[in-house]
Length: 153
Image 1 (cartoon, rainbow, N blue to C red):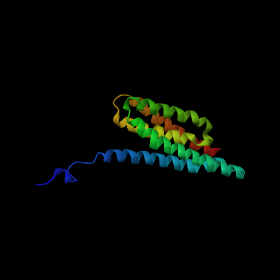
Image 2 (image 1 turned 90 degrees about the horizontal axis):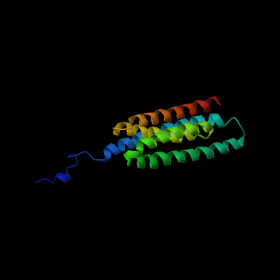
Image 3 (image 1 turned 180 degrees about the vertical axis):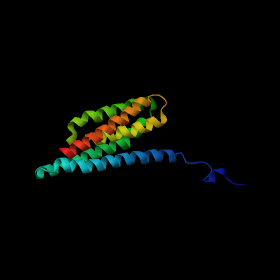
Image 4 (image 1 turned 180 degrees about the horizontal axis):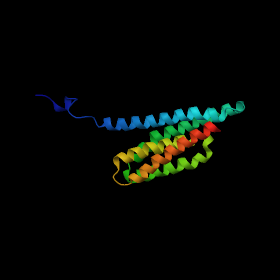
């Protein structure tokens, strides 16, 4: 007689879907970090030595904020589906608003979180898909506009 709990292929693990979402979140954060690390030096470095130090400090700070948003806030908001769509939309609007100070790189951090949370809510939510879609669009526009503004100065 075999023990059904000992058979590893009997049911797929619950973590498989969670890990796919986490992998997508990490991919979004990596793309945002790459855009940040390409755009920031172009926008900052034509100046003096103090600009290099400022670039490094701001870059590290923005990467830390991005990690906090994508690895802590987004999974936490997913656990409360009744407010996750609203939170995604708020992140999208904030990413546009901090785009006014594009040289800080903050739109990359907030935009990545808006995209990650918005995409997951588009897949799982039956209500509020329009808010999730708006969050993805706003986050993407903020990141793209910031990248272009950093490149053209």
